[in-house]
Image (cartoon, rainbow, N blue to C red; front, side, top):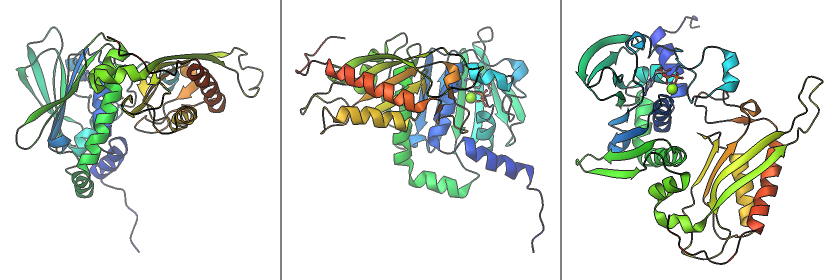
Length: 364
Ligand code: ADP
Ligand code: MG
């Protein structure tokens, strides 16, 4: 019988890293969120060969202070969260301090960064597989941070082959996620480009900074998507379903659902793209139960088409938990049943009040 022995440190690191960075989507999501957390107003995402060769995310955010170079890519080092208690009032996307550390284990990875007082001089940081800083080098750099991820999953042959096999689908999923960040980010300009093997660069889409979500949607999906959309501003109170003991507060919780949704009209040629994007306090996430309600209500008005949905649910930070899965895309909503039924009710009311005639094309 084989004896039990401890796994080598490097192996443990790779196994754990594979839980945060599971695919191309998680790489891009983590890097874009870091840029947003750094206060960037411009983020450029550049793919080479659909991300198979490299993914580069360049921002004009705060940059990294030199005191943090040594620890930045070590596991569980974060500048964003200091204790578990902070989680409920979290204002940043990141908090686990795992993304950069994982990327060191799973790719050829380096960072170039400059603070405002350092630019146009910056520093390139290279790391060991463990996340330990290997070397620094002075380079030219604008203010901000560029993170480059080359040859993702190169140390894990099975994952790498899987990625190569499914790259078209993976890349499509990544664009879906980037569309969501681009539409919700009213402060930041987000641009996405891809260079294929033959050297041809294509700009996939680009938004501008200081725009409304409606303008962002026009930039991402084309202005012709707009007339088919109706602005949504649902608002209701969540009444707790059961008594939660003597200490619980009797207050009702105010919820708002802001966004844009397809008008419930029939007919060809007036359809917005059937993209569906959900956010909780502007954090993009998968909310299958909420999506189901939207689609059901829409279907009772228009059974032949799927709606475009952009729905940002604004609620108290105590009313949900983001710490459910390592990729933080799964969000646990407390009081979910009441929330879903309230959405159903107020969405129905919105559609009832909609003029069912064909909308005129409006200027932005
Ligand atoms: P987390 O985001 O959970 O803190 P990460 O591994 O993603 O963990 O990042 C580690 C740390 O590196 C962050 O806490 C932040 O201080 C720094 N960092 C990462 N990306 C950037 C960036 N684009 N600009 C400035 N600082 C960054
Ligand atoms: Mg992060």
